[in-house]
Length: 602
Image 1 (cartoon, rainbow, N blue to C red):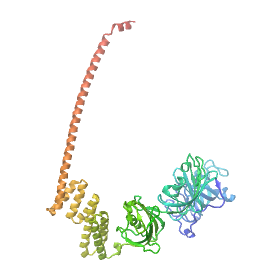
Image 2: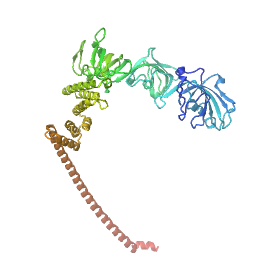
Image 3: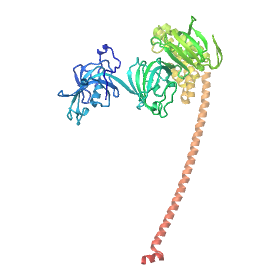
């Protein structure tokens, strides 16, 4: 049992936290009041609150707590006291270092809290008792929880144990892509320091690792400003081989356990903007508030654009130059810059890394300050100066909504004609959202907005067909047909999609409905011809399949019949042989040979 004077403080909450104290959760009971006593669940342990603690956090099993306690019998006889020794004690919860019941009581306490616990014999000293404690005695402990250090099994196998010495700020932790700035000191079991960062620390990307496997794993569990002590077993350090000396580290013997003091000073979040690891955004400075530019916003940015070798090929808004203003998702800049800027907040400062697929591709491109070679990776250092988002439907009156929907629909039509089906589909979605079914329009406007909605759905279905999103096309056409049961375009486009999904029966039904309305419709008749060909081919395939199945079944039946005949013949032969053998045995038993008779006569 470790003994230490003084305290190890976790963060001290403000005094105001005392006003509202949630208290320990005991079968949904309200928090204890000072002087009140209550049993902790069905454990048999009773707790009486003597002094409220700070905040709301409580320690957990495996945490290291610093406590003062006084142990007495029910009649007040004292048998143990840290107060008398004038030294608090450090204990690991869950190990029963004093008695098991005490650990169960301490996990209900808050920092600075004082409580009196009454423990039954089975959670105290039991039948064995101890000095000054008779067998099967109830005991009481008056406990003050001075502080605690949270202990975390990072690797879940005891290979990396983390003790939180100082809590970090906020709730964010670095991710695998993020760049972290850390300070550390690494020692062996004998206290020999084998590695130490400079005062300013060292930066690395978590995914790239650093020093040993334990360091990035532990770093990903930490908050900004957090300080911890790590105990790292060899399998997460340098293993059976150890580590030779280098500029960064002194020699580490094989199978060495490492003791690391680690601080996460800061980190820069890195975001995979496009989801395919081809456009990354590293945030150097967080922006204001929670709003981002998003698609369709008018943005104003300043930036310096470089090649990987540092060659600057473009600047905007730097050194008294004019910043760049553009509308996102309108192909006014390269796709990588467009997509990344749409994720930025006002005042945000970031570095973008853009692969060729989202940059200038495999063509040579002349820019303001230099030529960008084919297949170049681009690096933009960007600051979001300002942005103006498009008005949302709830910010508009009905006439503004209708005009905005018409404008977006026309933009979609232009994009569709130029073969940009994905972007066109987004425009139709946007247009439909302005006149959505949840919006409230007057009677004189309802017919117009319904027609607009139907047109947008049909146009988006046409985009879906071009993009081979057949289920999407079916869903959109079905929405139209819920409103207009005999809409020929909806029936025609849904039939196209159904044919592609091989649902020929449903496609046939849609085509017949369309021809009921317009028997001479050329497009519908053409698709009906295609459907009939497909149905004929399908019937031919089915006939062949069934024919093959019938031939196979006939052959199988014939083979089974032959097998049965052979087996029957074999059985007959065996039965004949058995009868013959039995007859011979009967003959042998009736008429023994002469030598047998001679043996019997002896």
